[in-house]
Each structure stands twice: as C-alpha cells, then as structure tokens.
Image (cartoon, rainbow, N blue to C red; front, top):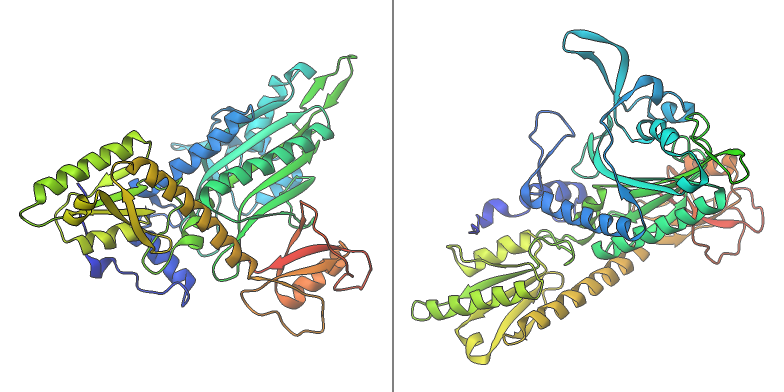
Length: 481
C-alpha cells in the first residue's frame, strides 16, 4: 500500500531557479531520500527510497566492473598510522580530513588507527603480498564501501558529507602503457554509468596543484549544476610508481628482474545521486532517469462506484503485464483522490504515470503522462509492456539530450584578461600555456578554479589568456560546489 500524503506539507518551499541550494535541500527531504536528523553532522541516514536509488547505481557500477574483469573485495575500515604515512604526499593531502581512533575501550592504542578516508594505504600493503610475478598482472579489484572525511564546509546531502558511500577500483600493471590503457577503460566505464543516469559530464586532467595526493596525474569527472557551478562526481588517477615504491609492490619479469608495478584508481561516490537530483529535478519534485527509478511506471486507477471492480481488475492485469516485461511497476491502490496520488508520484520522480479508467478500458488503452516533459498520450493495453518500454527509452534519451543542451549553455570562450570579472554561473574555456604562474594568476583574479585540460582532445587555436604564448591548448575554469 502507498499513502498519498499531504499535498500542502509536501509542497516544495523554494523554486529551483530562485535558490538552488534551498530547493535541493528541500527536495531531498520531501522526496524522503535521506534523513539528516542523525546526531552527527554530515552523517545522514539512508531511507528506503534513497537507498533503492543508490543500490541501482551500484548495480550499474558492478555490471561495468564485471564486464572489465575487475573482482570485488572488502577491506577493513581501520588503517594503521604506520601504513597510512608511507606515502608523504598522500598523508599531507588528507591530514586535515581524517578521523583517528586512539583508544580501544579505556586502553590507549600503541599505534593510532585511521578511519578509512580512501583505501590506497589499506590495500597496498596487501598488494605487496599478492603480486609476485608478471603472471599476477594486471591485478584489478574494486569495492563499494563507506569512507570518512571531516568535511569542514557546509554539509549537503550526497554532495558534501562526512560519511561517504564510495566506489573505488584499484589496479596494478606491468608498465605505464598498460596502466594508461586502464585509465582509458575507466573513462569508458564512467561513460556507461553516466549514460544510465542521464548525466552529461566532462573529463579534465587536473592541474598539478589540484591532482589527487600521490597521483602522477588525475582526470576529474565533472558535471554542471543548474546554478552554473560544477560538481566533481568522480576521478580517475594514474599513480605511476608513486605508491608501489613506498609499499614495495614489485613483480618478477620473465628474465628474472624485479620491477615496481604501475597503478591506477577510479573513484565515484554518492554525488552521482546528488547530480541526478540537481540536474533533472524540478519544482514538483524529483525527475528520475528510468534506469534507476525504483518505480518506473505507476498505475493510477480512475473509477466510479459502479465500475470500481472492473477498473481494478484491468489495473492489476496491467501491473502484472508490466512486471512480466521486466518493468518496475506499481499499482497505487491506496485511499485518496487521483490528484493527490499524482502529486506524490510526481514528487518521487516516477518516469511514467499510467491512468486507467472506464473510458480507457472501452478504448483498450491506458493514458500516460511523462514526468520529464508532462506530455500525455495513450498506450495499448494489449501491448502495454512493449509500449511502456518504448516510452521509457524515449524518456531516457530525451532527458540526456535536454541536460546536455542546458549544460552547454553555461560555457563561454574567454580570452580577455582586461575584463574585471566573470559573471556568476558561467564556465569559461580559456587558452592556457600550462604554467602554474599563469594558472594561479587567472584563478586569483576571477575567483575561479581551473578544472583542467580536456582528456579527450578538443580543437583549439589561440594564445594563453595570461601570458599570450601562442599554440596553447584549452582549459576550463569554473566555480565549484
């Protein structure tokens, strides 16, 4: 049974275009994605609806991991300080964010323990035991776990939290060439996952001052929120031998020589769900991509006293037909007016609403309403599974196209450093020579962050926006969340 709810209490208080953050915070609570009343700030409770969404995202990640010969593991939560401190840049990068365990009961620990912020320092001592010869390579593993970081900025559900639902893959390779192939495969994995979520995204090689601590280079994965700020939803890293040397991860070559492995990682978090909420939601609530919606099609019976039994019988048959077609369908047979039910399922973002009443039955159809556009039409009851599947595919395609167009509209080419400012909500593509001096000069003047240079080459002819050097490649700069 599903309760229709109270329209007045469930109504969103703020329009998305008026105040994105207020709208976002409100919709997360009203749609019951999580409960932020847990007595530790930034550690929210996953409610059933939100957890179903996150589990579906995890399923897509696992699908891609299985298809690319990664194997799932689960490492301990706690990391000895001695292991955590072996890579100096890594510990420096996380120094202000980690949680420490110092006691077991009343007894001080001989060695402090770190509550996992990410798993390099937990996994790599074991990798040094697992990797012995070239036959052990490539080693490709992943896990989906919680990580913990002391987020000092204002917390926000799914975007800035202190307990993070986290996916991470870690690989070891014989040489840089094979590791670079893995980074390329990671990019393809992200493409596949984001396609299911209808999330437009970019791959930008981060600046040296913004790469992951300990990485040789980092590819940031960004999307754009409706206020024109970017949200990093993941990152891929090539470590070279920066971690294998301090953790002594070596392999024996066929000629008997020993070499350090080259390593990569890919990480994504619950920010993927935050991106779905922010990009697609509207002033009536969530708008969910069909692939992750816990309910893909909701059936609303429209009946009078004299035809209730007939209508309910047809609705139940339609629900069964949709389930047989592999569609997650729900018959809302709760008490309440149809209008109240419409409101609740719109708030929850169900992609397709099906209404079945007396006239619909006479005509052999169900009337549908799309959540993304509001467009209405009919689908034949006799072939309802096939018809709804086709509509869901169209909805997914249209959602992706709409989001891509909106995000492209935020980006401007910028070449004039004499401008006093760059408006809020704009992302700029600039020419950049790659020097830290020019990069910091631009960031300081315009209070923007250089996100990086395209991982996938883009056509570009121009000069560095700061020093005027010719033949420079493009870089993107934005204000970030």
